[in-house]
Length: 276
Image 1 (spheres, helix red, strand yellow):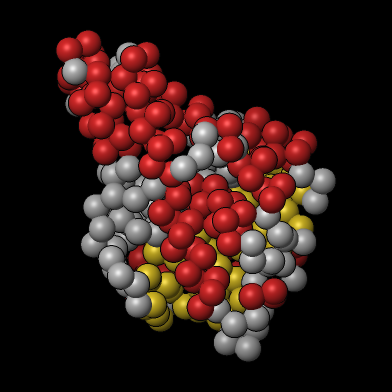
Image 2 (cartoon, rainbow, N blue to C red):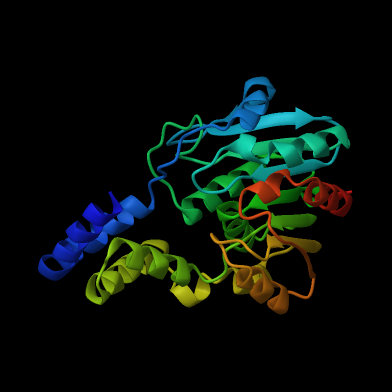
């Protein structure tokens, strides 16, 4: 399938670069992995589903834990679902926190077909405004979710307590470039895709760097959890964020990868201790 896609985009990039850019961006914003892993099912089947009215589609949250406890918002990664973080959120619920696990648009039981980090950040802002005791809210996030939360905090100006990022992107331009290389987009079509993205979201890519975005966000502490062998988001992303943000600390692992790190007991305990 990837080889066929590369041939298609190679042809389109030459004879219709604008069409190639539009199609590439459309595909980029559409999740493709909908499989629910066995260890995610129990959480998805037992947690209380809360819906917040929203124009395009209700915002979906999975609620667990002690309702009198400090609020935690969990935001999962791309091609995933709220159950992917249940190893962490179950521990936090047992520790007395009040957990709201966001079902990112176009994922899980959402009916939407596409989303992106900026649209998701707008959803996160709405969740923050809906929750009481905003100043006590902390976040635990994975990958795509870390970037979306960073953008939400910068845009909203809402002050929160702690952030626990289990992997994070940094330069979004790098993600776009890797994607363009993977599908065989040529330089002309790639530049058009970049220009279209910047126009749509009203900011240049140098202002989409998470390490810089966090400098404009209001929070107390940041824990950066990342595996040095992560093949999806390289460990260098976390090092860059840490270097630019004095309120951050790194907790690194080895051999846990990008997904299994979410279920590692040492990681789960570290996050729980950090958020207490």
